[in-house]
Amino acid sequence: MTPSTPHDFQGFRSGFIAILGAPNAGKSTLLNRMLGEKIAITSRKPQTTRNRILGVVHRAKAQLVFIDTPGVHQSKTPLNVRIVDAALAALADVDLVLILADAAQPNPAAENYLLKRLEASGKPLLLALNKIDLIPKDELLTQMAAWSARRPFEAILTISALRGLAIESLLDAMQTRLPEGPPFFPEDTLTDVPERFIVAELIREKVFRLTGEEIPYASAVTVEAFKEERRSKTIRIHASIHVERGSQKGIIIGKGGRKLKEIGQAARADIERLLAARVYLELFVRVQKNWSRDTRALRKFGY
Image (cartoon, rainbow, N blue to C red; front, side, top):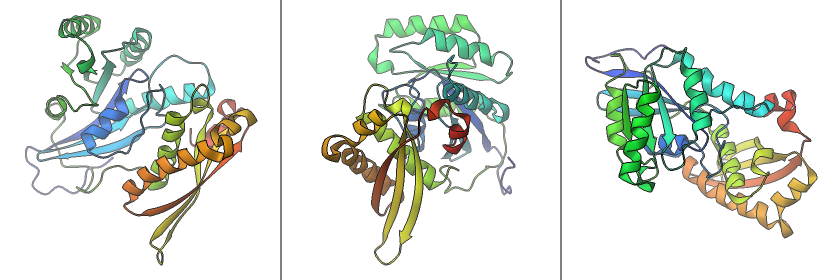
Protein backbone atom coordinates (compact mmCIF):
# COMPACT_ATOMS: atom_id res chain seq x y z
CA MET A 1 0.00 0.00 0.00
CA THR A 2 1.35 3.48 -0.91
CA PRO A 3 1.42 6.18 1.75
CA SER A 4 -0.69 9.30 1.29
CA THR A 5 0.91 12.43 -0.22
CA PRO A 6 3.56 13.74 2.24
CA HIS A 7 3.48 17.26 3.61
CA ASP A 8 5.86 17.93 6.47
CA PHE A 9 6.38 14.47 7.97
CA GLN A 10 9.96 14.78 9.18
CA GLY A 11 10.37 12.43 12.14
CA PHE A 12 6.94 10.87 11.49
CA ARG A 13 6.72 7.09 11.66
CA SER A 14 4.17 4.81 10.03
CA GLY A 15 3.82 1.12 9.31
CA PHE A 16 1.82 -2.07 9.46
CA ILE A 17 1.76 -4.31 12.55
CA ALA A 18 0.29 -7.83 12.66
CA ILE A 19 -1.21 -8.90 15.99
CA LEU A 20 -0.67 -12.66 16.30
CA GLY A 21 -1.30 -15.10 19.11
CA ALA A 22 -2.99 -18.26 20.28
CA PRO A 23 -6.81 -18.40 20.35
CA ASN A 24 -8.36 -16.34 23.16
CA ALA A 25 -5.19 -14.36 23.92
CA GLY A 26 -7.16 -11.09 23.79
CA LYS A 27 -6.10 -9.76 20.37
CA SER A 28 -9.43 -8.18 19.45
CA THR A 29 -9.84 -6.70 22.93
CA LEU A 30 -6.39 -5.12 22.56
CA LEU A 31 -7.17 -3.70 19.11
CA ASN A 32 -10.43 -2.16 20.35
CA ARG A 33 -8.61 -0.71 23.36
CA MET A 34 -5.87 0.89 21.23
CA LEU A 35 -8.43 2.31 18.77
CA GLY A 36 -10.79 3.56 21.45
CA GLU A 37 -13.65 2.08 19.38
CA LYS A 38 -15.15 -1.37 18.95
CA ILE A 39 -14.53 -2.73 15.47
CA ALA A 40 -13.45 -6.28 16.35
CA ILE A 41 -15.78 -8.66 18.15
CA THR A 42 -14.83 -10.40 21.37
CA SER A 43 -16.02 -13.26 23.55
CA ARG A 44 -14.55 -15.69 26.03
CA LYS A 45 -14.80 -18.47 23.47
CA PRO A 46 -11.65 -19.10 21.39
CA GLN A 47 -11.60 -18.45 17.64
CA THR A 48 -14.17 -15.65 17.84
CA THR A 49 -12.25 -13.74 15.15
CA ARG A 50 -12.29 -15.46 11.74
CA ASN A 51 -11.11 -12.70 9.36
CA ARG A 52 -8.27 -10.21 9.24
CA ILE A 53 -9.43 -6.81 10.49
CA LEU A 54 -7.47 -3.61 9.95
CA GLY A 55 -7.46 -0.81 12.53
CA VAL A 56 -5.61 2.53 12.41
CA VAL A 57 -4.20 4.28 15.49
CA HIS A 58 -3.34 7.96 14.95
CA ARG A 59 -0.70 9.53 17.21
CA ALA A 60 0.98 12.93 17.16
CA LYS A 61 4.11 11.68 15.37
CA ALA A 62 3.03 8.29 14.09
CA GLN A 63 0.34 6.21 12.42
CA LEU A 64 0.17 2.57 13.49
CA VAL A 65 -1.83 0.32 11.18
CA PHE A 66 -2.81 -2.89 12.96
CA ILE A 67 -3.99 -6.14 11.42
CA ASP A 68 -5.97 -8.16 13.96
CA THR A 69 -5.79 -11.83 13.04
CA PRO A 70 -7.55 -15.04 14.08
CA GLY A 71 -5.87 -17.23 16.70
CA VAL A 72 -3.06 -19.39 15.30
CA HIS A 73 -3.26 -23.08 16.15
CA GLN A 74 -2.89 -26.45 14.45
CA SER A 75 -6.12 -27.68 12.89
CA LYS A 76 -7.33 -29.94 10.09
CA THR A 77 -10.93 -28.77 9.60
CA PRO A 78 -11.46 -26.68 6.43
CA LEU A 79 -12.81 -23.65 8.30
CA ASN A 80 -10.00 -23.56 10.86
CA VAL A 81 -7.31 -24.18 8.21
CA ARG A 82 -8.61 -21.12 6.34
CA ILE A 83 -8.72 -19.13 9.58
CA VAL A 84 -5.07 -19.89 10.40
CA ASP A 85 -3.97 -19.27 6.80
CA ALA A 86 -5.66 -15.86 6.96
CA ALA A 87 -3.75 -15.04 10.14
CA LEU A 88 -0.35 -16.01 8.75
CA ALA A 89 -1.00 -14.27 5.42
CA ALA A 90 -0.83 -11.01 7.37
CA LEU A 91 2.94 -11.45 7.68
CA ALA A 92 3.66 -10.67 4.03
CA ASP A 93 3.20 -6.91 4.16
CA VAL A 94 3.90 -5.91 7.76
CA ASP A 95 6.82 -4.03 9.29
CA LEU A 96 6.47 -5.54 12.74
CA VAL A 97 4.81 -8.51 14.44
CA LEU A 98 3.24 -8.17 17.87
CA ILE A 99 2.79 -11.55 19.57
CA LEU A 100 0.11 -11.40 22.24
CA ALA A 101 0.20 -14.17 24.86
CA ASP A 102 -2.29 -14.94 27.62
CA ALA A 103 -0.25 -14.84 30.83
CA ALA A 104 -3.17 -16.10 32.94
CA GLN A 105 -3.87 -19.19 30.81
CA PRO A 106 -0.86 -19.96 28.58
CA ASN A 107 -1.33 -22.18 25.54
CA PRO A 108 2.13 -23.73 24.97
CA ALA A 109 1.07 -25.93 22.03
CA ALA A 110 -0.40 -23.04 20.02
CA GLU A 111 2.40 -20.67 21.07
CA ASN A 112 5.14 -23.08 19.98
CA TYR A 113 3.33 -23.71 16.70
CA LEU A 114 3.11 -19.93 16.11
CA LEU A 115 6.82 -19.39 16.84
CA LYS A 116 7.71 -22.21 14.48
CA ARG A 117 5.61 -20.68 11.70
CA LEU A 118 7.31 -17.32 12.30
CA GLU A 119 10.87 -18.65 11.97
CA ALA A 120 11.12 -17.94 8.25
CA SER A 121 9.30 -14.59 8.31
CA GLY A 122 12.35 -12.48 9.15
CA LYS A 123 10.06 -9.88 10.74
CA PRO A 124 10.99 -8.12 14.00
CA LEU A 125 8.96 -9.52 16.90
CA LEU A 126 7.59 -7.81 19.99
CA LEU A 127 5.96 -9.83 22.76
CA ALA A 128 3.16 -8.56 25.00
CA LEU A 129 2.06 -10.72 27.93
CA ASN A 130 -1.63 -9.98 28.45
CA LYS A 131 -3.96 -10.32 31.48
CA ILE A 132 -1.17 -9.52 33.94
CA ASP A 133 -3.76 -8.38 36.48
CA LEU A 134 -4.80 -12.03 36.91
CA ILE A 135 -1.45 -13.55 38.01
CA PRO A 136 1.16 -12.91 40.77
CA LYS A 137 4.23 -10.86 39.85
CA ASP A 138 6.71 -13.70 40.51
CA GLU A 139 4.81 -15.95 38.09
CA LEU A 140 4.88 -13.17 35.49
CA LEU A 141 8.66 -12.83 35.86
CA THR A 142 9.01 -16.61 35.40
CA GLN A 143 6.97 -16.45 32.19
CA MET A 144 9.04 -13.54 30.86
CA ALA A 145 12.23 -15.55 31.43
CA ALA A 146 10.73 -18.60 29.73
CA TRP A 147 9.68 -16.58 26.67
CA SER A 148 13.16 -14.98 26.46
CA ALA A 149 14.66 -18.46 26.33
CA ARG A 150 12.39 -19.47 23.44
CA ARG A 151 13.74 -16.86 21.02
CA PRO A 152 15.01 -13.25 20.98
CA PHE A 153 12.40 -10.48 20.94
CA GLU A 154 12.79 -6.78 20.25
CA ALA A 155 11.11 -6.23 23.62
CA ILE A 156 8.88 -8.06 26.10
CA LEU A 157 6.10 -5.96 27.60
CA THR A 158 3.34 -6.70 30.12
CA ILE A 159 -0.21 -5.36 29.71
CA SER A 160 -3.88 -5.83 30.46
CA ALA A 161 -5.92 -5.11 27.34
CA LEU A 162 -9.23 -5.40 29.21
CA ARG A 163 -8.23 -2.97 31.96
CA GLY A 164 -6.10 -0.71 29.76
CA LEU A 165 -2.88 -1.24 31.73
CA ALA A 166 0.40 -0.17 30.05
CA ILE A 167 -1.23 0.27 26.62
CA GLU A 168 0.53 3.60 25.98
CA SER A 169 3.89 2.01 26.79
CA LEU A 170 3.13 -0.75 24.29
CA LEU A 171 2.21 1.81 21.62
CA ASP A 172 5.44 3.71 22.33
CA ALA A 173 7.51 0.53 21.96
CA MET A 174 5.89 -0.28 18.61
CA GLN A 175 6.09 3.29 17.31
CA THR A 176 9.85 3.54 17.82
CA ARG A 177 10.35 0.39 15.73
CA LEU A 178 8.40 1.57 12.69
CA PRO A 179 10.15 3.17 9.70
CA GLU A 180 9.99 6.90 9.10
CA GLY A 181 7.46 7.96 6.49
CA PRO A 182 4.13 9.69 5.91
CA PRO A 183 0.78 8.23 7.04
CA PHE A 184 -1.00 5.63 4.92
CA PHE A 185 -4.55 6.75 5.79
CA PRO A 186 -6.37 10.06 6.41
CA GLU A 187 -6.75 11.12 10.06
CA ASP A 188 -10.43 10.17 10.20
CA THR A 189 -9.84 6.55 9.09
CA LEU A 190 -10.44 3.96 11.80
CA THR A 191 -10.66 0.80 9.66
CA ASP A 192 -10.90 -0.29 6.04
CA VAL A 193 -13.65 -2.87 6.53
CA PRO A 194 -17.17 -1.87 5.38
CA GLU A 195 -19.97 -1.18 7.86
CA ARG A 196 -21.88 -4.23 6.62
CA PHE A 197 -18.98 -6.47 7.64
CA ILE A 198 -18.81 -4.98 11.15
CA VAL A 199 -22.61 -5.28 11.50
CA ALA A 200 -22.45 -9.00 10.60
CA GLU A 201 -19.60 -9.46 13.07
CA LEU A 202 -21.51 -7.73 15.89
CA ILE A 203 -24.44 -10.07 15.34
CA ARG A 204 -22.11 -13.08 15.31
CA GLU A 205 -20.55 -11.86 18.55
CA LYS A 206 -23.94 -12.02 20.28
CA VAL A 207 -24.40 -15.58 19.02
CA PHE A 208 -21.02 -16.43 20.56
CA ARG A 209 -21.87 -14.73 23.85
CA LEU A 210 -25.47 -15.83 24.27
CA THR A 211 -25.34 -19.47 23.13
CA GLY A 212 -23.26 -22.42 24.28
CA GLU A 213 -21.81 -25.74 23.27
CA GLU A 214 -21.26 -26.11 19.50
CA ILE A 215 -23.61 -23.33 18.36
CA PRO A 216 -21.05 -20.48 17.97
CA TYR A 217 -18.70 -22.58 15.85
CA ALA A 218 -21.55 -23.80 13.63
CA SER A 219 -22.80 -20.27 12.92
CA ALA A 220 -22.06 -17.62 10.31
CA VAL A 221 -23.82 -14.33 9.61
CA THR A 222 -24.61 -12.57 6.34
CA VAL A 223 -26.27 -9.18 5.84
CA GLU A 224 -28.85 -9.34 3.04
CA ALA A 225 -30.23 -5.80 3.23
CA PHE A 226 -28.77 -2.54 4.55
CA LYS A 227 -30.93 0.43 3.67
CA GLU A 228 -31.05 3.96 5.08
CA GLU A 229 -34.56 5.44 5.17
CA ARG A 230 -34.06 9.20 5.09
CA ARG A 231 -37.63 10.11 6.00
CA SER A 232 -37.65 8.11 9.23
CA LYS A 233 -33.87 8.48 9.79
CA THR A 234 -33.69 4.75 10.37
CA ILE A 235 -31.33 2.13 8.97
CA ARG A 236 -33.11 -1.13 8.10
CA ILE A 237 -30.94 -4.21 8.29
CA HIS A 238 -31.95 -7.75 7.39
CA ALA A 239 -29.42 -10.43 8.35
CA SER A 240 -29.30 -14.21 8.42
CA ILE A 241 -27.68 -16.46 10.99
CA HIS A 242 -26.60 -19.65 9.23
CA VAL A 243 -26.26 -22.92 11.16
CA GLU A 244 -25.52 -26.50 10.15
CA ARG A 245 -28.44 -28.44 11.65
CA GLY A 246 -32.13 -27.98 12.39
CA SER A 247 -31.54 -28.61 16.10
CA GLN A 248 -29.11 -25.67 16.17
CA LYS A 249 -31.72 -23.45 14.53
CA GLY A 250 -34.14 -24.32 17.33
CA ILE A 251 -31.57 -23.40 19.99
CA ILE A 252 -30.85 -20.00 18.42
CA ILE A 253 -34.54 -19.17 18.04
CA GLY A 254 -35.32 -20.38 21.55
CA LYS A 255 -38.65 -20.99 23.21
CA GLY A 256 -41.19 -18.58 21.76
CA GLY A 257 -38.37 -16.85 19.84
CA ARG A 258 -36.84 -15.49 23.07
CA LYS A 259 -33.20 -16.33 22.33
CA LEU A 260 -33.29 -14.79 18.85
CA LYS A 261 -34.95 -11.68 20.30
CA GLU A 262 -32.20 -11.45 22.95
CA ILE A 263 -29.50 -11.76 20.27
CA GLY A 264 -31.21 -9.12 18.15
CA GLN A 265 -31.65 -6.62 20.97
CA ALA A 266 -28.02 -6.92 22.11
CA ALA A 267 -26.72 -6.64 18.53
CA ARG A 268 -28.97 -3.67 17.70
CA ALA A 269 -27.63 -1.70 20.68
CA ASP A 270 -24.03 -2.12 19.46
CA ILE A 271 -24.97 -1.42 15.82
CA GLU A 272 -26.73 1.81 16.79
CA ARG A 273 -23.59 2.94 18.64
CA LEU A 274 -21.48 2.05 15.61
CA LEU A 275 -23.70 3.82 13.06
CA ALA A 276 -24.88 6.65 15.36
CA ALA A 277 -28.41 6.10 14.05
CA ARG A 278 -31.67 4.33 14.85
CA VAL A 279 -31.62 0.77 13.57
CA TYR A 280 -34.38 -1.66 12.69
CA LEU A 281 -32.79 -5.10 12.76
CA GLU A 282 -34.56 -8.21 11.50
CA LEU A 283 -32.86 -11.57 11.98
CA PHE A 284 -33.53 -14.86 10.22
CA VAL A 285 -32.07 -18.28 11.02
CA ARG A 286 -31.26 -20.57 8.10
CA VAL A 287 -29.89 -24.11 7.94
CA GLN A 288 -27.06 -24.87 5.53
CA LYS A 289 -25.89 -28.39 6.28
CA ASN A 290 -22.20 -28.78 7.14
CA TRP A 291 -21.31 -25.35 5.75
CA SER A 292 -18.05 -25.23 7.77
CA ARG A 293 -16.74 -28.20 5.75
CA ASP A 294 -18.05 -27.04 2.38
CA THR A 295 -15.51 -24.96 0.42
CA ARG A 296 -18.26 -23.33 -1.66
CA ALA A 297 -20.16 -22.27 1.45
CA LEU A 298 -16.95 -21.03 3.08
CA ARG A 299 -16.36 -18.72 0.11
CA LYS A 300 -19.98 -17.55 0.23
CA PHE A 301 -19.61 -16.60 3.87
CA GLY A 302 -16.32 -14.80 3.28
CA TYR A 303 -13.80 -17.34 4.60
